[in-house]
Length: 123
Image 1 (cartoon, rainbow, N blue to C red):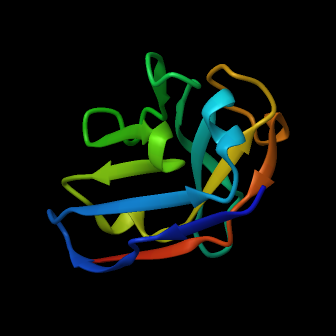
Image 2 (image 1 turned 45 degrees about the horizontal axis):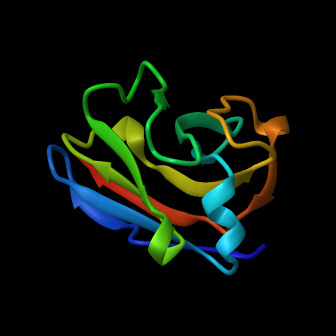
């Protein structure tokens, strides 16, 4: 499975961006998907996850209420809508393909990773 993330860019604080992650295979529709991020000098951290049907989601406390994860299995694509962006959201954002069909919060529960898309939020 190959994952291609896109949609990152430079945005002012308070602005919005939508990230997309396209999977190379239709098997994405059977698996949970997630978004993680890594800021310079920090560990990669969980952002959001969604189960295989899109019925269950989970968010990091730092993004809850501002970010929304969704998926379109017909397009083999998962999205991350990010609103009210803050400078602390600046990071390289990675999408990941889960090992199971459910929601997963830990990096170890993901088998495939995209290359990352950079989000920079200016103050």
